[in-house]
Length: 352
Image (tube, rainbow, N blue to C red; front, side, top):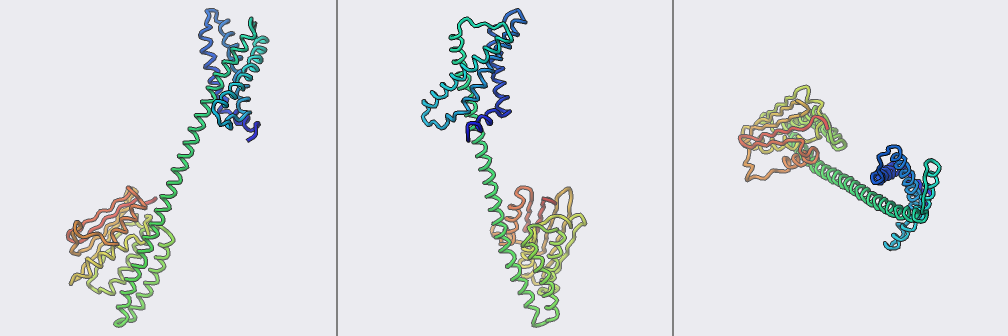
């Protein structure tokens, strides 16, 4: 940065306001000690002190910014250089202020040498004080900027980590689901090839949905429920009358933004552990509603349930828990009841 650039930066509006505030404060403090009952005379003293102070301050700011003393590594040498600059600027400013006051007011100085010595000392005190203030302010601003950048970078890392974890979960879920679906269709081929063909068409529709869910984090709840219905239809081929299901949703819940393929692992668990092992099968009920900006989805099966304290959660429940935590944090609820069948209630915001 050139000397001219440093002077332009020093003379920015913010620094000028700070300088004028400091000059005004010093002027008022000095004028208090020169108080006189003659108000007119006292006001002249205040005006003269202000002119003198501003005449000293501005040359000090300009000279101090022209020479980059920060490049002097030795602190004693840097202090000596600053004192020399402020002494020179103080003498120059004192002469300027003396001249202006002599023109405007009956301003007389009996001892010019003593006057210039005093203004040089005052210039050093004032200049070094301002230099210290600006240096501390700049370092504080730099520290705050670095902390803000660090926080932004940390947030980006958290988001990237979250995205990677979500992608890993979806990568696990999709093949797991498709493998089981293909097994269901394969069981139809020997006995009912026509029905198997119909199921292949349904599977094609399911593939389209899984591709959509893989590329888009969120779908509508209506699309998710249609996908679940197709999945249950395929499973019903395998289980026959042993599987009954019911899907009920109010009109307001259909457009809710919903994580794609979130319900499939839970429904698969209900079939695998709550319906398929039972001699008489069982039923699965899915109920959805939207109220006050919240979307509520409940899944209940008629299976035997399990002891949540002794039986660890499988991939289905744990993967759903993890996705909800990553996507919503404390803005969601996941309630699990395992007595007399498994009941799961999920509540999330209707929109992000």
